[in-house]
Image (cartoon, rainbow, N blue to C red):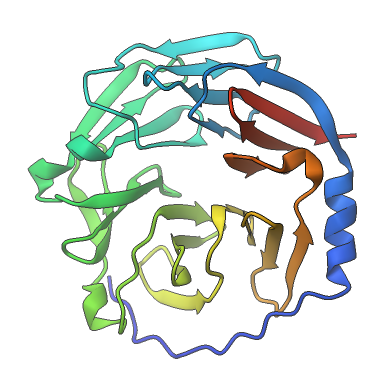
Length: 273
């Protein structure tokens, strides 16, 4: 796997009449239900199941009706859950950063296998994500490499050392594999896109975004004041002030059919009319 030397891309981002289109899109969502609970984090799979994490590290799966579908009871075995990847609802990744451990669970939240990254000499990882082929992407901060792992932790493939490629090494907090590209998001440096062979494609200076996500080839995020939407391959950044109903959110997850807004002790779900 080889990353070619990047060519500096000067990207002009415009936010003009497209804002009205985005405004109309967000206006089509209304509050459909709320989940009152002790929630510190959550995620949503492509079937509409919601996974909520409590302050005592208890993970619950709720179906589309809000009924309990499964509970993960291994709350203290590996420490605190750092991230929950539900890209594939049949293969869910729970990442425990303090112990450098990935726990793979099935749709009933039963453990299938665990990966001790330290056993592979991968000692410092902030971001992981499920790959297109159901292998696991991890960014090894000490090696400065993006690596793809099998379920047993062995390395399928890896990039060259990013320190040989970039003037400043990315520090990604999110890895998303969508529509033929792997995105690394660094809140201070923006988006770095690679193909599935690790070839560098482009960098986008979309910095300062929270809750970065990718739907098809649309990049989404927000700050405290605005939502942002960037269509890959264009020069158009859409932005809109966050509606009053979403103000004060701890986390916002946008999906094609709903917007999930986490506030203190409540998860609000806004669905299309």
